[in-house]
Length: 209
Image 1 (cartoon, rainbow, N blue to C red):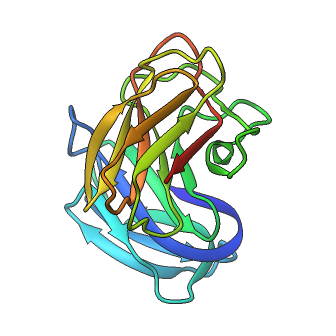
Image 2: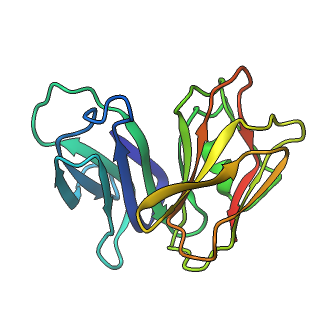
């Protein structure tokens, strides 16, 4: 599986989270993370064995357009990917789902412009997540703000924040503007854990302050 960053850019930390609560073994049991500028010549970022969560920092000055996770041995398990994200220059990297509707883009949810909107192509499924990885570790963050269109349903997702490699939840989505305190410490990532529903989700912007 691979990520296309759409253009070559400075490469930040790569996060790969696999498996889920009901099937923790649904992951690449033996694999490698690789990056490339042209999609042909690839550099190894890190290898991993027997772990469902991988986070790796690239060498200083590394640039890439493509990042991929590749199995190095055959396996019988299914593969469930909860998060595959790359931090880079500029705004946060957005990954996960539901997939954006035609003409839209996941990145609209964290492009620095509240006027652009990520609109999903379908309703979210329970356990599906939309994740945001900042281009650099935010060492002092006091709140997470999630902006959505007017009339967005309350409780559509749990907001989760990653600090010290551990995810915790400061609260749930509420109305068009959700502001949640995160304690003033370092933030490595944010994700929206959708609870499922009949309405396709939409997000204008996710901001960590």
